Length: 181
Image 1 (cartoon, rainbow, N blue to C red):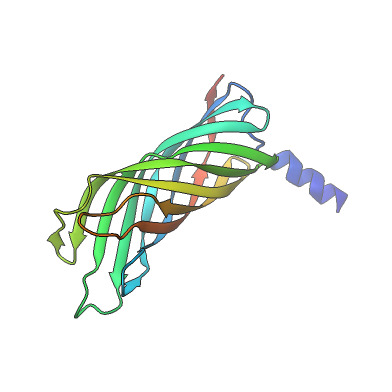
Image 2 (image 1 turned 60 degrees about the horizontal axis):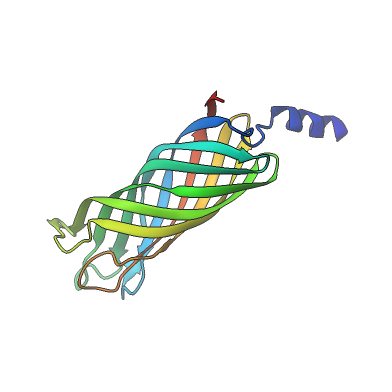
């Protein structure tokens, strides 16, 4: 058992060193819905992009990224209610705290720029061009591979008029590599 623990710790990629910059291409899945919608069901969509991270202290870093994200909801009653399909370019800005080598908790702020918005098969001109959310989550790094899970709390309305906000869970896998110090 001790030998297994030693092998695991050798392969583990710890947190960023102070002053180190890393880049992480990542891809995964969103499980999205919208609040205040009568018949909302999950919309399963893609999320992909890149994040950069900068080590500020031994256990603390900041990160920012660009992520293509499919959000919205599907209607459980398609005859009477529409499904909403939103695509965004999200810009997550996160604080990362490493509670254990390789294991980070994270929270931050995320503006999103609307790329497209459709209600069923027509364009949704009422969708807001910029959307804000608060992501919280955790990630685990092993041999430069990073498994990341985040929940996103919608902070602004998805469209006007309306009271619906995006709410989604994202799961991604990325590969982290150092750019330098």
